[in-house]
Amino acid sequence: MTRLLLIGPPGAGKGTQATELAEAFGIPAISTGDIFRYNVKNETPLGLQAKAFMDAGEYVPDSLTNAIVEDRLQEADAAPGFLLDGYPRTTDQVAELDRLLQASGTALDVVVLIVADTDEVVSRLLKRAAEQGRADDTADVIRHRLAVYEEQTAPLIDVYSARGLVVTVDGLGAVATVTGRILDALAERGLRPPVASK
Image (tube, rainbow, N blue to C red; front, side, top):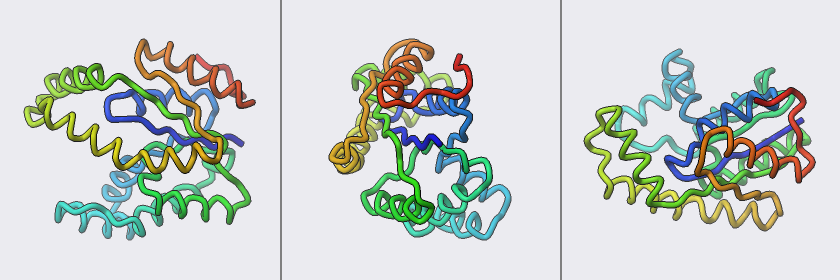
């Protein structure tokens, strides 16, 4: 059983590392963004509720986000463990995740905090925006998103640090290099992939 949480700023490579780690440990990478898109696309009852908020340009409330994550964690592929990316985002969601895991007699093993130099992240995201034709992603907008991330996630990092769960990893460098750093940090906590990692 391996239960991981990945936290990091936009542009730090969380999505890429989530995929690499999920493959290495043989567990699903659970991204709230992906879950929302799946539920909306398949018009599930939860998806239809979420779509109503999204169409109105509003945040999906914690209660609905919690319900969608709870539903996903109960699927068979998450039984041997999981990697969460993008949830929890608030201290209320931390409390709800605690409740969900306690109900199943489990807990998070490690919280991987990916850190990256702000200027480097900004240039990375500007490059991505140019490649994807996202003209609204200016340096100012990106820096604002990074500031919001810092403000919102700092309390979460404090909570998990107090529990001794956080390992901090430098997210800059080649994908394989960063994956190696994370695997080394996890190994120090006694977590090693059951399958050969790349």
